[in-house]
Length: 288
Image (cartoon, rainbow, N blue to C red; front, side, top):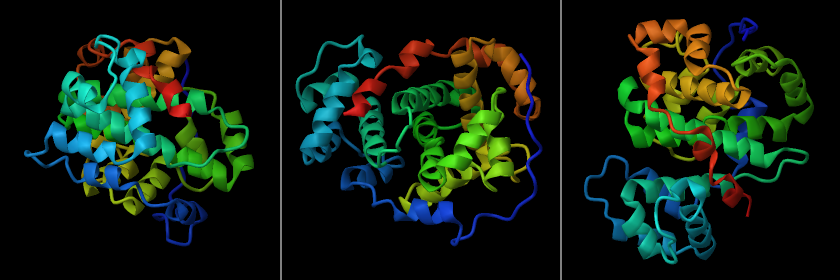
């Protein structure tokens, strides 16, 4: 396994006139359900009934949440036939994660010639790995899941804006964890930075907005951002497992500075990761 990444040139922060920022700000606001759920992460009084009631206001969203609840991702639960069943059997955290996943997937227009299934499989996996590694990285698990779910959405906006340049990036970024470096060279910015602008537009918690930007280069951003580092590591884990490479070795090769800075035992960090196919499960329900 080799790692070849171009050096990212210095560049100022994205401006409001950047075409990718304009593209991010052109997307409609998040649905009311998602907007309400985004404000719930610091609430101790959020109830299952409240979340189920919010979802129930949107018939299409309700149907999608039920499809996801019955996917292989939650196969250890009995089949659910109503939102109340889903709420009781999955619990508050899983139901909120499911709903935000469905809302994010529905927010993006079709990208011609784009492999949506592959993208959302990877996105779900990054979310699952970020959530699984969260305790060791000292970040909140639900926030890590949402961050993993959003991290790569900047790629969709980049493709909508300049599909040709993105194809050039994909052609060159064949080595593990090399895409971000090639984006910086070819496109002048990176997908985590574009995701950060989208998250700002959608009213995501400030901590996530900052973390997305930090994920572009965790060892450069100061102060060090643990959540940003967690998201970048989770993305590497997904790429590595898709390629069939050793995860611990891949993390040591790609981000030794992060591992050392956070004093992480990479073997322990990767020992509790979910099965890759299970981490990807449910993507097919996001296609409808």
